[in-house]
Image (cartoon, rainbow, N blue to C red; front, side, top):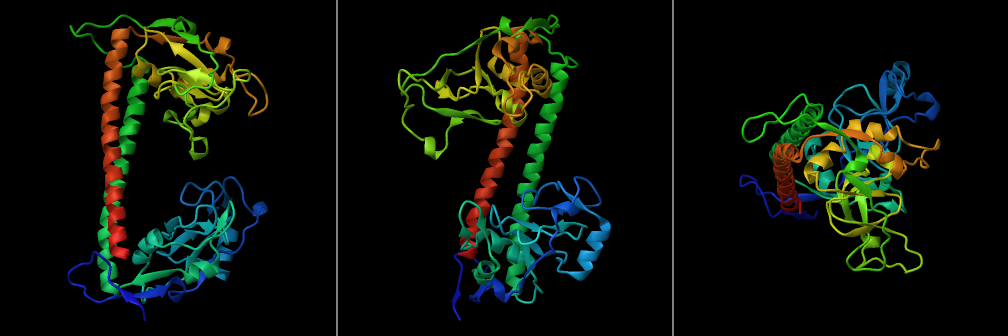
Length: 396
């Protein structure tokens, strides 16, 4: 029997790890098929499909059907590791025993009796094994592939030690993610109070700032509608939700934009421009150019912001939900994907603005929160890299 020893081991364990296949643990199981007409958009028992696996359920089945199928057919035991067998292969969810049902063939599990491999250890095995998946655009993890997947298996006491150690690392990552989420929620709440003027700042002398003045967007923004020629100065970029202007994917990775002088296809944008796409406001296609000189798709509307606005303030102010809702009122068209907010209409929207000095005070305050969020985000990434290194040394 083939054996190995990992690079990183606990000192009290000296035995080699034995090569096994996942099929040695137990058979692959799945729930009984649920047909689309048996589901509703709300109901008693959440039904997880491959798209909602590991997220919030968007479909439900009746308690009667759930009880019937759970008693008569295969159903996971508490602690079993559910695994995605289609789409993004290898996503895992530990079944916690709650009433829930799972899509057949796309979500499967190995019926493990925990005699040679614990579910706690198997959870981490799934994170490092390479599945020999088959398929084209949509990959599939067939039962035969899952069962023939190889891994090295230590003794149960060593599995427990490893799983407990890695669980502690996961707990740290989860706590950091929770801290980040709380900071983001805090920022969202404090921004709402600041922009509704429930919280006001004072100047350096401790005096109140003047009242915010209502202005049309045209008072501090002008449309930029310049088409870019072939240029190294204006590379082709895209606008990504919550990230602003960023590089296109690999298939667009080129030194400079290629188009001709007659048929210019892309709009030119500069650092600090306000950009939106009428079709995708809800998904985040709105914000400021935080990259620099670039060319982007003509579906975007682009506006230059003048000197009476602070970059950080206006980026937060004009991407808040209240402003996006106000923009949506100006949409024209009746078919999704063909909506449009004309630039002239957009510039007629009215907003109350503080003085530039107060804007900078607000911007500095919000930036201090952003720095805390970024610090926690860096800690998350560092801890995830640390875990990745542990997995590579403990399992390879």
